[in-house]
Length: 307
Image (tube, rainbow, N blue to C red):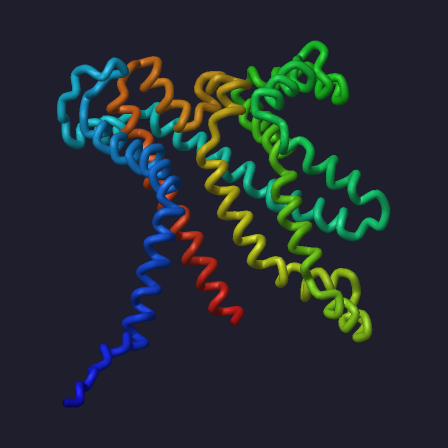
């Protein structure tokens, strides 16, 4: 009697692919799990906790955790000091973003066209960006802005209280910030300039294009994406300004330089009103999200038009 052996059906190709995909997914999750845990513990959870606290009257000791609804937000929108600090933040953003973008581009163009000791110029322009905010603030406080012996008054022959006058304090902080952080934008622009194909300039030179024509028709259009990135990053960084203003002026004189983050810090850790400080912080958070979405939409439309 002959016995017939039936072979087991072979695993189909789609099933095998699905099994391999599941295996890779499981291994991938294992690799990213440490980062996800840190991300949730130090960003997601504090964000959700702060949102919850903004609807309570909790203080710095953690007591009086009473739900108050939108009372903190209503108080913030009726608080003239909150509006003043928000206005100071917007003024600082405008005054710092424009020179930081233009000066970063100008320095990058200068260094890109220099043919000698480029490393020295790169180090000179980027070096201040590596300094901590405390070092920069002390440097300008002790050497540049003192009315009696400061380098600025000594050079100009004046005796202006640069950080003590409400009319000049914000401009002084902006000047310090530009000197300190322009190196980052300079480095981004320089890297973008070095990636522009050289044959475009050679073809333009054959056609008799001047240096201005090359800049207007080749360089600036090719730097469009880099400029969009720098503007977005600069706006977000300026809206979150805190360190240098807190260290140099403490928000004064007469609240002329106090940004909204410092105001939230003051009401939270000096006034002990953590719930109200959280509400103020989330007002800034919503503003930053709106600015980011508007910038993204504008740049997307511009990219669609150019393409």
